[in-house]
Length: 556
Image (spheres, rainbow, N blue to C red):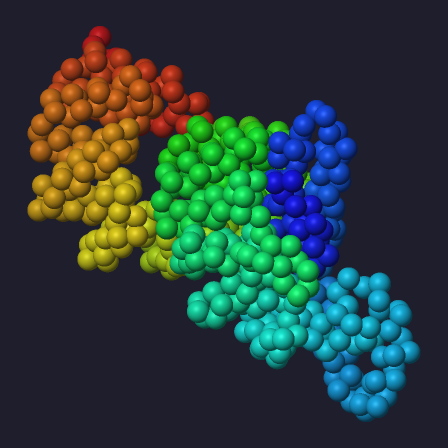
């Protein structure tokens, strides 16, 4: 088969449920599993994927009310602290046992441990296993330095796959990138289908060629089968290439590769979510919403990237869907960071302080959760707390330098009138994403913030439009420059080119403003009315309605 079932079973056996679940999505959506002539394969595939979900969600709680959520999280933390102290005590007592007693007790009770999937040998106490559990408890409590100390106390030869995976994660959090890369490479050599290690290596700067070269070529001593480099196994190589494109901000390349994989694995929820995330980043909002909704229709219990989906629903002002989404997420797993970001998005227009608390809670749960930082920075900027917004956007940028973190940084520095810092951040974005029209526009925005830089801003906006002709944001910014410098006719002719294919409320409002400024009131009124047809009632601004009414009075 294109997706080896034994690899999923191995991942499950080692407790690596995230990679097992993603691989299970590929298995269920593979042509072999969906052939009408082989319903038993589909059944087996679904059972295996069900095992992945069951193991991963074994301890999740479905509690909806706010107080219950807080209590649930506190209870989980207290339970973890209890595990931690118990394991610590066990390790202390173990060190007190004389060596000869340890040996005899191991042999006498080995049969009781043989059924444990985590048992490396038949011992009563495996010291390295206990250290791993202590480190895992520290990690859950975000005590990463203590976790790293425990993991480094395990000899390299004694570490198994889950131990190496945790150690790689801890090295990455502590910014020991070289050590993290070495550990993740060891994981891939042992199991090429460890997809979370592939993603981590891509984000740490490894090339697709480097990662693929780690796939085993020949059977090893453990009789593990070599990786299938034929056409049936090539999908994994394409997946590596897609993740490397994403990590290097080549969103177009990544999207094309994921779309190609989706043709081979139809209805693959993991691929649909990855595509939707890219589309959300590059501004293809309608396509992103469609893919998020398709993924949810296949698996209504998905939580991954649902905070990104919530942000898109907010932009669309679809609060009915957003309410339903948040309600569903709370019933699935109220302890995930995505749920708190979605809550933050929901509460933004009602109570900014509460919204900020939810965003901060998402970061406390997972200090590497990028949407939490972006939401926190956006809220602080809206609340006129630009100085506090800078570290939030900077944290998101350090985790993954995508366009949204750079946009947040640049707009925050501009709000603080720190032009030098804004220009440096925008140039950083352009360097990281040389083929991004949005990065070019960011540099233009900085130059446009002062009268002496308008000519430079114009060049950057024009370059952005040459790179991406349909980028409405650059067109609106360039039109604004034309208006400021009194070239209203140029602004109108530029914007009217976008009416047929890229029209939305912002385009019609801008055209209406330009026409109103040139006293062409009938045309202005027409575009304000067109804008109102695009906007839901909840999004209509008082200013738009006021301007429309003023124009009506002037025409009368």
